Amino acid sequence: MKSTSRICIVTGASSGIGAELARRLLERGDRVCAADLHAAGLESLQAYGDRDHLIMHHLDVRHPDQWQTMVQHVEYCWGPIDFLYNVAGILRDNWFKDTCAEDVHLHFDINVKGCMFGMQAVLPSMLRQQHGHIINMASLAGLAPVPGLSLYSASKFALRGFSLATAMELAPSGIAVTVVCPDAVQTPMLDQQKNREQAALTFSGFRSLEVRDVVDTLIDEIPQKRPMEVILPYWRGVMAKAASNMPELGAHSLSLLQKLGQKRQQKLKT
Image: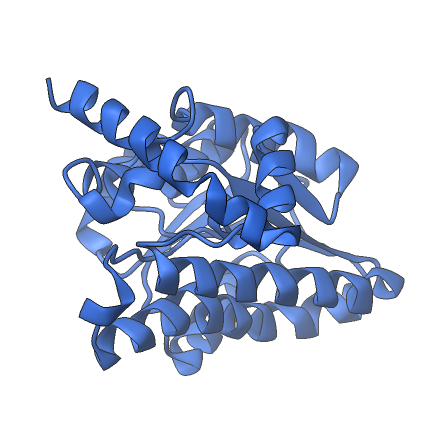
C-alpha cells in the first residue's frame, strides 16, 4: 500500500538548492530519493531521514540508463513517484570565443538533456496514475540573454522552452510541469563567479536570493498552485523578458548593468 507521504526525487541534492530541498522534504515526512553525481555529499541527509524515508543514489543525469535504474528502484521500494525536482545543473562562465566543445556538451547534456531523461524515466508511471508534478530548475538567464554566460543562458532558454511545451502536452493527463527561473542564488555555483569579469551581469541585482527563498517556493507555493512558470523575484523577470523581447534596447543597457555587477563583485570581495 502506498504511503500517504509524497514520494520525491531530487537531483543535485549534495549541495545548494538541492540539499536544502531534500532536507526540508524529509522534515515534512516525505520520502526522498536524493541523487547526485557526488554521492559522498549526500551523507549529511541521513540526520533528517531514516531508511524508510531516504534513498541516496549516485546519478549522472547524462545517462538515461542510470535514470531508469534509479526510478525503477524507487518505485519498487515506495511506489509511483509524485514529484521530480530536476535541480542538478552546471555553469562554466566564459566568453564564447574562449569556450571549447566540452563546454558545449556539458551545458546541454546536464542542464537540458539530463532533465529530459529524468522526465522520460518517471512519466510512464505518472501517466498510468494520471498524477504527478515535475519541477525543472531553469534561471533568469533563460529569460534574457546573458553575455559571458552564453552557453549557460542558451541551455536554460532551451530548458524553459521544453518545460513550457511539455506542460501543455501533459496537462490533460493530470501531470503538471513547472519551470522555475530564479535570479542569482547564494550557492557554490554563485561563489565561483565572484571574481569573474564575464559573470558581472549575474551580480547586477540589488541582492542575491537565499537558498531558503527558492526552497520555500518549491515546497509551499508550487505544489498547491501547479503553475507552468515561476520567476524569482518577479520584478527581475519582468525586466528580463523586456530585454529579451527588445534585444537591441537591452544591449544598450548592458554597460550600466555590467558596472553595477562589477561594483557588487568588488564589494563581495572585500
